[in-house]
Length: 262
Image: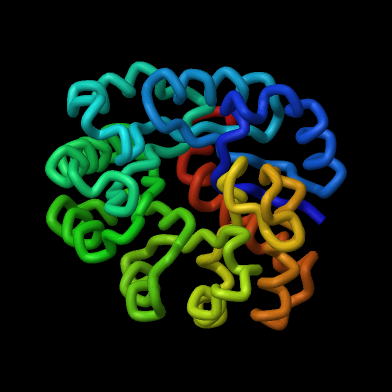
């Protein structure tokens, strides 16, 4: 079984002490590809440095919406200097009205800058949308944000929102949340999402699936997410892991393969 973790933060300090063990367990579980997602310019550099030491690791550079007040549009454009053969996406970007509802204007400005950056480098977007579905869709619509493709990371909407996003060519990424008793709506979304548009992610060190809730999340735990999805989709877990692995390659690697040696 080969697995691709489409979104995590193993470069964060809280993972540093246990990183070698985390990577060993990931390898044993079959995790072969990982996208490390930066949340600000300095953090993106850390993600890149780790990706450069590991086969199958890649980076997305961006400024998280929660950081919108701290950074400027110019800071987003300056991320261009970080784009190289290990950088396969832009973000995470979007809106977070749960943690930072007082910076909506700033969040929108840097979101639009990320969209522009993705077009300049022909890279897909990694979208963060927390309690901001209408605003996220509006900005993507108004700024041709769908054109480079991308993924709604840690999808948290309903079936109607999922249908709209899928109609625009984006992927939906599923986390360990799908294993929670309270996640009936997410399981409905997963059930109606075509297999060729599904990704799985840990968002490590956060959102550990059952039975690991309360512990630091890590890529090896994606087996639990895949197991839940396997039951929902009525597809064997090995087949499902292969499909989501292929989807990872299509979104983040295939469109760049002709230009760079990844």
